[in-house]
Amino acid sequence: MQTWYSIIPKSPMLSIYIWIIFCIMPFFFIIQSFTLWQITLGITLILCYFLCHYFSFSARPGLKYMWISFQMLLNIAMTLVFGYVYLALFTAFFIGNIKQPVGFYIMYGLHIGFTVLSIVGGYFIFLDLFLSQTPFIIINMLGVVLLPFTLFSRTRRENLEGELETARERISELTVIEERQRIARDLHDTLGQKLSMIGLKSDLAARLVEKNPEQAIIEIKDIRQTASVALKEVRELVADMRAVRVEEELFRVEQILKAAQIKLRLNGDKTEIKMPILAENVISMCLKEAVTNIVKHSKATICRISFYQSDDEFKMTIQDNGVGFERSNTLLGGSGLKGMQERIEFINGSLEIESDEGTTVVLKIPLAITHQKGENVK
Image 1 (cartoon, rainbow, N blue to C red):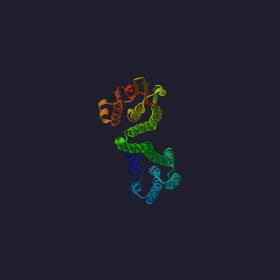
Image 2: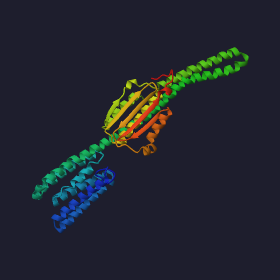
Image 3: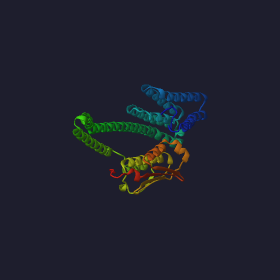
């Protein structure tokens, strides 16, 4: 919780309204039911309770438990003197936001015990009043029991999710570093020796040009042969580097849409996709960006992805039934769409976006240009 009055973190104004209602209720209850000195005492106890509740948010851990204890004592006093039991909900809410497990369980147990004892005592002192309010007292007690544990569990889950996300980011960073190191090692092992040999043979051929032209020609031929072998090995190395395949990205997209409760309608045969690695990598990144936009902004319930490949062209259409957008604003303002357009244009492709009862993104790649004869497609 960021502020002392925060009951619903994502809606601070609603939290303030709830606080106003709960703050007015005890004053109204006391003023309508008791004498002047009792009203003065009741207002003093309520103000002391609210001060304790406020100070507990900014206190250090040890003092925090002290302020919670004061709140419990004031709860007991309000219940036994005035028959007002509902301040216990405020204390229960605050206990649920304690992060230390040991401190939480101690305060949780004490609060339940003191609340039960004070309610039992209240039935002896204010029998008629408590009998008339029994349904509300039961609801209040359920809140005292369930609310802290629910909030504590939610806080722990959010903390664990945050730690998991941090760990994933760290793993991604380490994976990138390891991949860079692997590429550096492979390039060094592949090119280092051969480039050194080319350099030595070039020096030798330069010295033999005038003294022994025939031997110089042989050395030059060896240089050419070594360069050809090095070039072949570099191409093999680049081809073996991990690229993002459309088939793999479609699987990840399906999982993302399922998590966002968006139905996927897929039309196309993933096994028939055959294109250069660079083009497939670009299509995969654009597909990921388009689906991310659908999940974040479209409010759609259905996403349709269809693709078709001919000898000359690969075409993919991503369509949703969401709220759509203004074409000009999106193209100018969205860095993600700009990135998609730049990637597609880099491989001579085209990007079309339409927004009419949803959004349609059409990607086209001319395979006749990018797929050259003799190139290793897969």
